[in-house]
Image (cartoon, rainbow, N blue to C red; front, side):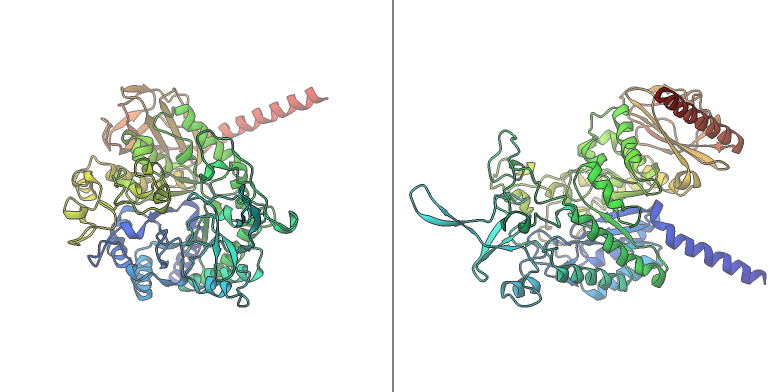
Amino acid sequence: MRVLTLLLLVATATAASDLDWWKTALIYQIYPRSFKDSNADGIGDLNGITEKLPYLAETGVDAIWLSPIYKSPMYDFGYDITDYRQIQDEYGTMADFDKLLNVSKSLGIRVILDFVPNHTGNESEWFNKSIAREAPYTDYYVWADGISATAENGTAYTKPPSNWVSNFRKSAWEFHEGRGQYYLHQFVIGQPDLNYRSNNVQAAMKDVLRFWLDKGVSGFRVDAVNKLYEANPAQYEGVYPDEPLSGIAGLVPDDYEYLLHVYTENLPETYDVVYDWRDVLDEYITTQGEYKIMMTEAYADLQLMIKYYGTKTRNGSIPFNFSFLGEITKNSTAWEIKTVIDKWMTYMPSGKVANWVNGNHDQSRMANRQGEDRVDAMNMLALILPGVAITYQGEEIGMTDGYVSWNDTKDPQACNTEDPINYYKKSRDPNRTPYHWDSSANAGFSNTTNATWLPVADNYRTLNLAAQMANQKSHYHFYKDVVTNRKTPAIEEGDLDTKALSESLLVVTRLLPGEAGMLGVVNLAAETQTVDLTSLKLLPADLEVVASGVDCTLEKGATLTKSSISVSGHCALLLRSGVVSYSAAHAHRLAYHFIILALACTKISAFI
């Protein structure tokens, strides 16, 4: 009987874990092309990822997110998809993917795929059938007739349906001789936009989700979700309306920023599509016993992003929180960083899950944006704040952008500038250079005797994983130590408090009654500062260093008191306290509620 009871308890705990795993998940983004090459062709692949899964498991990663691995001509390196149900040849086979999935699960790592719903590639079967007006594909894409115009010399010509500009510069419309119409492409010419006003398209994309869910993936990252809808011509006398000018100085009509994109992004219909996808994922909670995560990418105003969470009646996605990318720089103060953190937590609807993103394949690397002396600080913040943490490959060791010459540039966003001098301002190649595994040729990424698909960054001989694993005082070991403590009850469930003690001192506490408290301390200044934390009444007096950044003089295992903590310049420390007492926490919460009640009464009496 006892054995049966124990088994039931274990099964119940496992089931709860499978349903709640996502709420505190550490998700590691892999850009497959640059992670690990297993067959010496200079390009990363699925078997290379599988080879390195033990490293990710040892580090404490809960899930991996794979940038697109689908069949593609690679105009935009996988974001131009020919077939959503096939693996790109240079990455491997479906059997290779199945192996990766099985090995991942055996190591306790879940697999999340990149879902690219806004567009396909122009070589896809769908697009070719749409060109031929073959049902039901006729309206799968956004097609439109050109507009008759007359040049100044009196010559008649046809111009695109509107002035819309591609994210990658120049007109977002391309004429197709075979169909005799223009098609919309918000990105490269080879990425025709799908038409979400077609019920057939919506059904087809749900089937794509089901295909991979049936294989056992644990969810999706959704690409460019706020681009799904464009203005409906039926509401504008049958035409696509021109977008207004932005008025930004120094731009030309071919530049994306030349226009305000009021008709091509953030349309309200988008949210219902996301909620519908959430319904599809929820079908699998009961059949597979696992919550399926969905995270949506939208570079938009915070109020618009928050809507992706859902409504009172419908569940949605976790909208990527890009505030660390866009609102924090290497010059940001502790006050400003606190404000950024508090802003998201304030706007996020009650009961939803936060997330923190330090980098991705589209942004300059964290070490370049935030400064190499803030790598530990930013990694720690993402890992100890409530909710999901996303790490882009290489951030755990503080990789920097690599130099990629104009001749070696592959990114269409940079190539489309047609500017061999200033191309780097638009290029995403520097943050996509191969991972630094060790100091051997090609940084251990590839055994190719030819060039790797992008050149390896010059600093790989000293900045690499093997060197950092051998050195206890390294970004990697600090990262791993923080990840280990991320699994504690205080960080998984505890209350959050952020304090900027000065312009350069930031303190983040996670406290849970009956459990050891966790405390992150960041010194942004170059000089040593002494921190007095006696104002944190709930925090027990005795503290222990459980993770010490590369610039810290206090070492892991050191004990101290909260009244006097010496924090060296550019140091990030994670401290553990004694158990937070129930009585103190209860008294603090009562005091807090009395203050809120008093303020409310004051407002009411003033109103009366």
